Image (cartoon, rainbow, N blue to C red; front, side):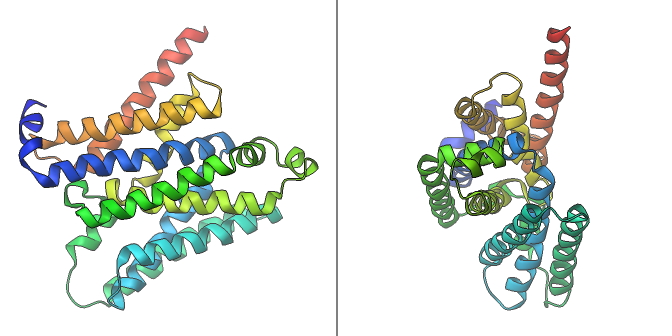
Length: 272
């Protein structure tokens, strides 16, 4: 920990990593709260893993993997959201199929691309220490879209998250706001890929909000607590992984997972 604090003022890549973690925490705290409240973690997982298809296609054609990830995430969000709203009998099977299809397409296109790209692998497993300054501006822009959307449509999102039938009766366009909510989740997934990678993105999206839900009931408070926890996990994960030279992404998730398990145990004991 002390080595990390001493190195932080002298290394730009550590400063970028710290900022990336904080920026990611804003998105995951806000959208993770809705994912936990509405219990759509499986849908978010389908969106996250479908992203690999877009990344692989973009990389094959020499484009930015982030752009491919963004397009694939939004497309998957719209498809999965539409299927879920229609309430089809086998919607879980279709989501799992899209999940697997995205992964398969990504792997096929990556395998047909000449050479080996380390940057692309970092999107899969996360490498927060390699986040460039340009990506910080992109992450800031995504955060701005998420924050502005939540501020403008907070009441509609809460209504859709808790009771879709009541929201419909109150004149809320459930289809529009539900799909918009999933699109914002998709943006958050792309945001978090920069920090912990595609494989671990769902954990960072849901664990801070799940911990917050054990102590507060208000959606607004959950968001604030989840954002604070996300910033704490990313910062401490960076610090703890720095000296022993451990992968930062898994270290962040390990810390978040251990905190969630401990919090769940403490909450269960207190309720007895």
